[in-house]
Image (cartoon, rainbow, N blue to C red; front, side, top):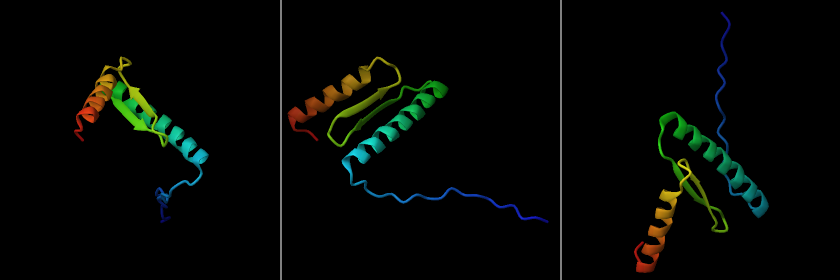
Length: 88
């Protein structure tokens, strides 16, 4: 009887990308894939999905499945209020 060869996914080694340009490209590609998966999740489960990620330069990248951005505005206003009060 012939043996069946099962192929497994290979683990990739995680390492820091030294070049700023390559790091930004990697961030944008990963951001696009995360947003795509979040969009699929929101459609299939009718869940409200909000993602906030900060780039290396501190710029927030935001995805809100409801397209109203109310949750994100609330998040940023709460963050500003807690920063002013000194609460972490």
